[in-house]
Image (tube, rainbow, N blue to C red; front, top):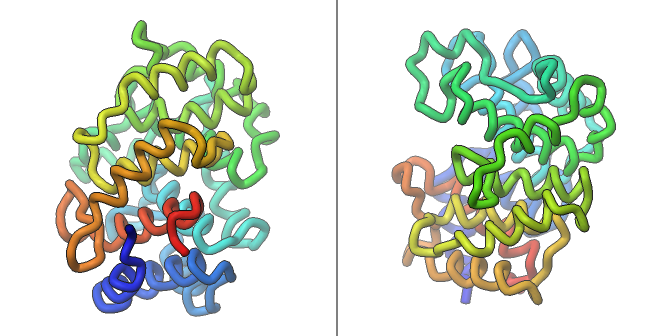
Amino acid sequence: MVDVQRAVEFVRKECDVILQGRLESILEKRKPDRTVLDTIESMRKSDGGFAFWDQDISCITSTLNVVGWLDDLSLSEEAVVSKTFDFLLRHQQKDGGWDEIEKVSIFNPPPFMVPGEMNTRIWLTACCAHWFIRFDRAKSLGAKTHPTEFLTQHLSPSGLIKGYLYASWDSLVMFHYNPGPESDAFTSLLRATRENFDSERHDGADLAWLLRCLRDVGLGTKDELVVRVLNALEKNQDENGSWISADGAEFSGMTTVDAIRVLNDFGRIK
């Protein structure tokens, strides 16, 4: 059983105004106070995106993180959303995929953010496509080569997408949209996801990410995989109400909000 009150108390005590606003919007199903939106907008860089570092150099990874915040805040048509997707669309490449911004290289980024690496390109493409679909902006994806074409070039013999596992999970959303829920691309990837899921391998952030993807392909609580992931996520709640991230204590607030979001989406919070 989820202790939502302890989770709320943890976020209110330990987290910033954006995390608090996201949690309130999730649980109360309302748009945030203006202060939250102004805080997000103040973080935008001159090129329209958002940055992981203090300098005026945006990155695709951080911009995608902000899109997740906007989703939690129940925003869809506001200017802050349109400007963010405009930035992402400008950086889609001719082959339909994305890559991290080249200037990010000067910061010695972690492996999943290294520009030019195929694993970086694959997961960023899958994640970008997922969010364009989630925000009902998928039609703009076809202006260049469609992301589906890029992603299908990187299917492994296991049925998963090559590289980071998150790429497979986000690609479920892309393949469900195009070529469709009855396609071999989608059904094979979903089957491989089921076969390869091991709750012991994943922290709360992973489990919440997977559940978000399963939600966005329309799977519900009668689905066996959904139930397994939900049960694993519930068990991961710490005594202080938070969900601990494998990346360190400083990420517990984000992981807690991510967990509450998907548990709420699937009706595990009353």
